[in-house]
Image (cartoon, rainbow, N blue to C red; front, side, top):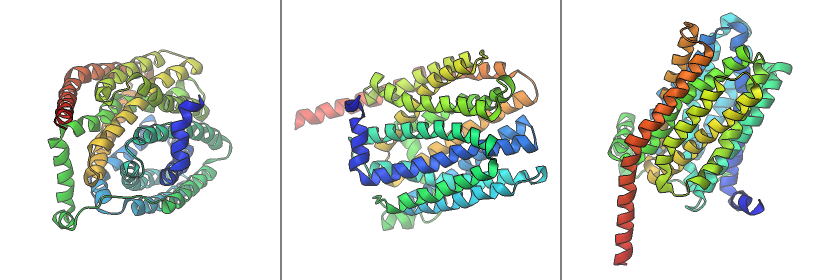
Length: 427
């Protein structure tokens, strides 16, 4: 067991800049997941509407989506370390504003604050993800991403579980204060890190001074480089269905299990456990990166089947087990696609590539959640039937991925291997 953990402990022990970036992620993520249930609690308290609960998720995702193209341009053009510090400070101040929502007439503020918070997250996330290859060696990159995913899941698990109890017993105001402080502490660790970056040349900066030019170039780069576009589409394709099912866990905890915030904390903790375990297990099963795009299709099918079981159960224990299994697949998809993008996209385009990936991801999730929310609000299907519908659609998506996307990746990896063998023969 000690030998299996050694690559991860060595990375944290010896790579000080990755360690500081990693600690910043842990702290800010804890605040995020610790505080999100308090936002849900405010909406349920002052509205009780399933539609308005789903709308906060949609606002969150669409705010990320609309700001992502410009954010990607900014993260390629300016110092990413400085951008992350500014984003952390701004988000810390914004979450404190949730405290002022004390009546149903002020509930609109929750949507405005969330939207602004996500604008700064749209800058922070691609800055952070783009920075990981710059503070790690080629050998450390996969380990660094698996550790980041595992840490996210542990913090997600503990943050959601503790946040559920804290929201119920301490009140939302205390939760928001802790969330704000977490962003402040995160900015301190980023401030202390040294994060190299390949900056645009003066000529390129001048040519892309108009943001529309820089943004358009990012889209054009993805269009012309299908080997980068494929992993960029992986998360969005996955969340077209998973986004709705994760949203429906909120309603299942409230209306099926009758456990409220505590039940949601447990189910979301199960989601976090699966996300952490999945990439470790996935890398052992799919050892060659050349097969990772194909594996994503299998992950979709497996995840859809697991949520199909969740839709038919009444036991929180059994639900939690299948949620863990489902998100082992989604966690593997996340890490595999991220590593492939980090390897394949050059540094001067990496911010825009990851921001476009966020755009695809957030739009897909928003459409997914809104569709599920409307189905439930209009009572077209029951909660179980709706989850069953989306789980079936995810299985179909996986099959399509295997037969339409994976073969193109096979052609690309075969060409790379042939080129490598030719170069090896010549030398």
